[in-house]
Every structure is written in C-alpha cells, then in structure tokens.
Length: 636
Ligand code: SF4
Ligand code: SF4
Ligand code: FES
Image (cartoon, rainbow, N blue to C red; front, side, top):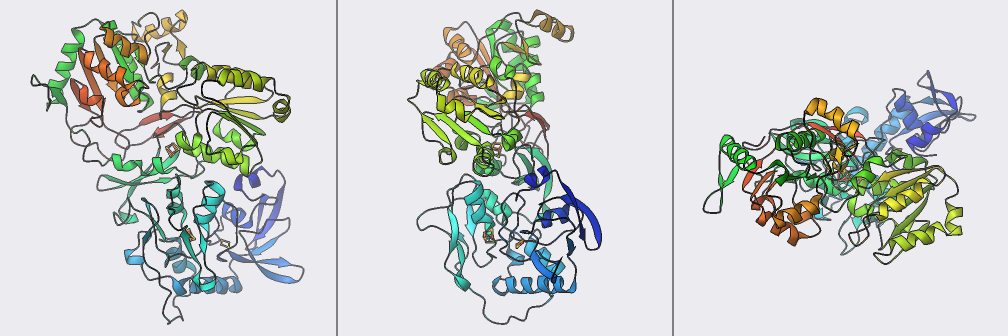
C-alpha cells in the first residue's frame, strides 16, 4: 500500500501522535503523507506522492518511539500504525536534516543565480529552512560537462543532480520507457541516458517538472523567465480529449510554460510532451493578427474587421441558407461551439454542420453511450477492455492511467488492435488482427470461453474507439454493445479532438441539436424553437457529405471554425477540391493552414490562454479553460 489513493482507500482509521498532537490517519498510510495531511510538513527530495517510495535522499528522517527507545526512520517509507508517536522537530532530527543538506551540497554547484530552478527549487528552499547555514567542505567539487542535451526538449546538468531517482522511477514505473538511468557507482554515480539513445519519451517533460533541483531543464523554458516574474492561471489542456489540468504560466504576455496540476480525476499531475510543449504555437510569429480578404488578384489582403464582416454577410446572404455548411467547433470551447451552431442553424438557417471529419465516432453513439465510466474508474477496474486507437499516440495521459491500472493495480488489460500498441507489454491478453477484420474478430471473442472466464468479474471498463480508418465505422457500436452487456461494465468513448464531446453536446453534428437532442425528436426541437424561433427540419449532411455537396455544387458556401479538412479529413483530395469548388469560404482560425489559406475571408480568432470558457473531455467532464494573455493583433 504505497499510493496516496490506496492509503485513502484503507477504511480503518487509527490515531498517531505527531509532535505531541494526536491525529487520525488511515492505517498503513505513509507517515510523510499522513503528517502533511494533518498540517506537519516533513522535508523531502526523493518522495513523490504518485510514485513508489525509495528512501534515497534521507531528508525525511523523523524520530519514532519504539520498545527500544526512539529510533530514526525515513517517513516516506514508514507506514503509520496505531499509537505511533512521531517527533519531526527533535534536536536529533534537526541535526540529521542539517547533515543531509550539508552532504547533498558537497557536490552541488553554487549555480542558483543562473539556474532555471532558482526561486522554486526544493533544494534551495529546504537549505534555507532546514540547512546548517554554512558548509565545512572546502575541497574541489565533482565536475561534469554541463549541460548535455539528452533530447530535443530536455537538458541534463549532472553536477546539479542529487541522485533522488525521481526521473528514473518516473520513466520506469509511470511512463514505461526507461530511457534514463543511473550509471557508475559511489562518488561517480550519475544519471544518464543510454549511449546513442536520446531521451525520446513522450512524457519527458514530467521528469523536468518533478526534478527537485535544476538538473533537468526544458529547452523551451530555459532562461526565459524567473518564477517570480510569472503570472499563472489554472486551465485545461485541449490538445486531446483527456482534459489534463494544467497551470498556464506567462511573462510579459508570452506563455512560457505549462505545468501539470495534480487532479485525481484526470491526469494525476502528469502531462504528455505534446500537451506540455504545445504552448510554443501560441507565441508563434505566424499567428493571424488581422482579417484577410481575397482580392480580385486572387491573393489574401489585410482588411478591417468591419470590411471583412461585410463581405461575409453579403456573400452568405447571396445564397440560400441550406446551401451553406459549417465544419468545426471541436477544437475550441463549448461556448464557441454553441455560438457556431446557433449562428448556422438560426441566422444562416442550415442543417449542414459537423464537428468531426469522418475520422471519429458516430455522434449518436457518442452521446448515447451508457453506462458511462470515468477515467478514475480505471483505479478500481478488475478488467479493462481496450478496443480503439493506440492510447500512447492519441490520448497519452489516458495511456498512463491504463498502464498504472494494469501494472500497479492488477487490472486485467485486454487489447484488441490490428497493430502493436504502447500498452502491449502490460496486457493480460492482446488480440492482433488484419485491419478490416474487426467484425469477425468480435464474433470470435464473444464465443471465446477463455476470454469469458477472464472477464467474468467486474468492474469492467471498456475503452471504445476507432482503431483506424480501414475499419468499418460501425464496429465501435458493435463493440460497445458487447461490452455493455457484460456484468459490471461501463464505457468510455475514445474521441480524438480536444472538445469533440462538448461540440456534440452543443449540437455540432448533422443529427443532433444542443443538449444531446436528436433532430428527429419533435418535442425536443419544439422546446428549442421556443428560444431559437426557427430550427431547420431534418438531419443535415456530415463532413464527407458537405465536401461532396461543395464538389457537386449543391452546396455553395462553407464556414470553417478551427477546422482544417484539407489536412485532417481522410480524403484530402476531396477536401481540397471542395474548397476550390465552393463559391465562398470563410475561415475563423489562429493560423493560415492548408484550408484557411484557400478561404475567401479569414478572420483571426483568439487561441488557447487568450479566451475563456469550458471544454468537455472524453468522459463528459466539463472543465474550465482560462484567459491569461490577450490575443495577438486584432484577433477576437
Ligand atoms: S536528474 Fe533530478 S530527478 Fe533525476 S535523479 Fe537527479 S535530481 Fe533526481
Ligand atoms: S494527454 Fe491530452 S489533454 Fe493531457 S497533456 Fe497530453 S495532449 Fe493534453
Ligand atoms: S524523501 Fe524520504 S528518503 Fe527521500
């Protein structure tokens, strides 16, 4: 029982005495956590609440009463038991803390003024709070080449390393890619990557965040700011649909880093590198800063907002409402998606709108999938059935949660996928099949007695999505129907873009109105019409139907909201010709991309950290995204 959650699950409450004060804690909970939860902070370097304790640094020594008198123990490896008497402030403890810090500083350089960690460094802070004040060490310190680049994103300064093993344990226990390790012995011990192998982890930024000194630093943040210069706001990563909680930090209106925030429900403090380092796009010099209108010379030219909006209004009102279509809404906020849908349905008066690009799940399946599981249900699952994309590639922090459930918490992980996936090494059973054969594999699995025995006990969490575009898009529905009927099963749909779920909730789908109301539901449509006055009848076209319609000229105009069908639709040739055949295209975007560059009017919009609202992750959790900086130029 080493994790905080596991400890909290322990039902038996016991009493221990910390510095003369009786406190109630869970039986078996680690002393360092129990003390902290009750207001006593014990200094530490190597212990991290999301990893197994190792007792490497000895900074957390405390005195505990024993039958043979007081004895020193590391509080990060000592479980609480009833009647335990603990002293965290005795003279012996203070002497031990001073000794440990003096020892750690023997080889640690005096880099604080030039170290990125300065100002938020546990070693610096704890030396001030618990250190001896001066060192007796006058000899030459150990030297290493500094810093060395261990990947495109991370630099390692071995002189600063205090050998706490947080980075090595993270890579081994949490991310499952042990690419950083200890080398040599004794005074020569150093942390290092393997020769000729970069630290090519999808999660390398976490090691930078948890390193208690400035030994690991992230290239995009190095020397860009001091912690006291930063303004911060808590927000939600929208790069994929896991919805990790982040701290967005900026200085002088430039976002400089994202840090993971510990949220039990979603990311348990971790981020993937795609989400963590994606902030550089916000500061890109290529961001759109002013509206653009295509002139008679065929080129896009800067325009004022009012001129650009006049062109949009003229061109959209020159065609019938149902000759206009809209794509997008899955990369922004719920509020933007709602406004987009309301504009298309009630101002333009068209039923043709879609937030997915023929690469997602059936909207009706997605919003109607029951019973639903949360990400956190993985902690309690006996069995996890994963039939969907490779989580490591598409939903990286969900991959970490599933890896933990299978590796640490003992869940049976069953993976069905046409190729090798990042979780195969922790799967109890892996079924690999030829792409396109999913339906027959499903029939075989349903009749497989060995599998039936394996999944006889719940709780079962089914993670259901599309494994690839070669697969019949009705397969996830059939898989969901199978899993749903198993005892104790609940489901999580694996959606792709950050806010697909929210966009569908807001009715950005050909068959849905806001609030998950089917377009065929007369009563639901009538209720909406009380507020919206007019809602187009009948289902509209989906993304592929819209592109076909533009090519066939039955549709004449297209509104894109943060959507790039030329890049993202499975048939880019179809998408490109659709945009070329459209009589009018208006794109609301943050960049000129393959699609917006073909538009007649481009409107610059505020991006992540520049506007606020809510997003809905793949489990249906609504979370806030917050504004920290203004958008560039005239973006709105
Ligand atoms: S590099 Fe940082 S996290 Fe890794 S062992 Fe050294 S001090 Fe610990
Ligand atoms: S897993 Fe998804 S939501 Fe989480 S940090 Fe990575 S990209 Fe962002
Ligand atoms: S925090 Fe306990 S030994 Fe390092």
